[in-house]
Amino acid sequence: MTAKRPESSDDMPEERPEHSHAWEAEQFERARPQLLAVAYRMLGSLSEAEDAVQEAWVRLTRAREANIDNLAAWLTTVVGRVSIDMLRARHARRQEPYELYVPDPIIAAADGVDPEREALIADSVGLALLIVLDTLAPAERLAFVLHDIFDVPFDQIAPIIDRSPQATRQIASRARRRVRTTQPPEMDIGSQWRLVDAFLAAARDGDFGALLDVLDPDVIRRVDAGPAGPEVPPILRGAHAVASGARAFARLGHREQRALVNGAPGIVTLVDGRPYTVLGFTFAHGRITEINVLADPERLRKLDLTSLIG
Image 1 (cartoon, rainbow, N blue to C red):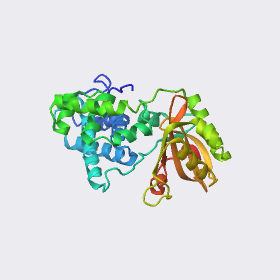
Image 2 (image 1 turned 180 degrees about the vertical axis):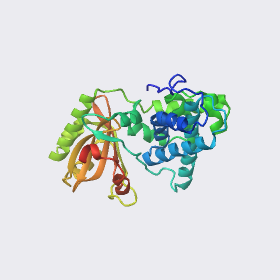
Image 3 (image 1 turned 60 degrees about the horizontal axis):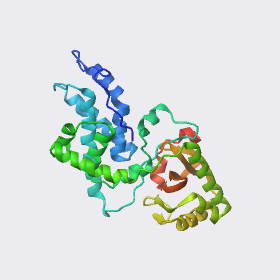
Image 4 (image 1 turned 30 degrees about the vertical axis):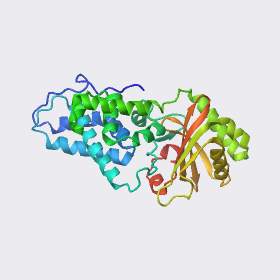
């Protein structure tokens, strides 16, 4: 994973002019793409990420008399603090500790991602990685995201989670071991598209053998249908179970639209021009290893799909 460095002091001058509200607003807007990227990795929710960034702006306006040496670093730390509070509140609300949640996907046309969305999904932040991050404790997730992805020093992370820098280093190391076990070898995007197209063709044709050819024997399919979505098993494991599920879904006859889902080949299915499901794929060793499906109608309505159907 390629770490994304915070903006340097050269990129973001820290000397504040008098009556600096306009200056603060300008610097905040320059920092916004990175702040959204931090919050999205922390929360897996686009709306919550926006809320966390907005809260950072509110706190900045309240801290105008404070002596902030590095505004970019200060804002990144604030977004991390707000995000971990939101994560802890989310964990407290969940009644079942293993509730299935597929993070908000970032959808783009199959021929490319616009610059704003590209900033959100840089550094290989696919749905599979976000799902793994969602299994970490809030402190583990914060330490890993801020240090390993955004290169924030441990002595800046430690106060957010009320740990020493050494303990924070150990927390990040523990998270890193869990994340690394899920990182598959890379495949070029052309090979990935060929697998997705072959999967769809086999599902439409009801060709069970062809489906088994493109699915890893230990493939897993997750579906987050929300409280009002279709009644389907939330998790299927193994090529035979996933192939059977794919054939049954294909018989529904929904329109399929190729799309980039978090920068990787994926599919949006449509009913009467509205999104019915979003499928994100993970690949390794020439086969599909994961299929993560968002089928929650309420969350699908909130996705920005203008690049596909607008």
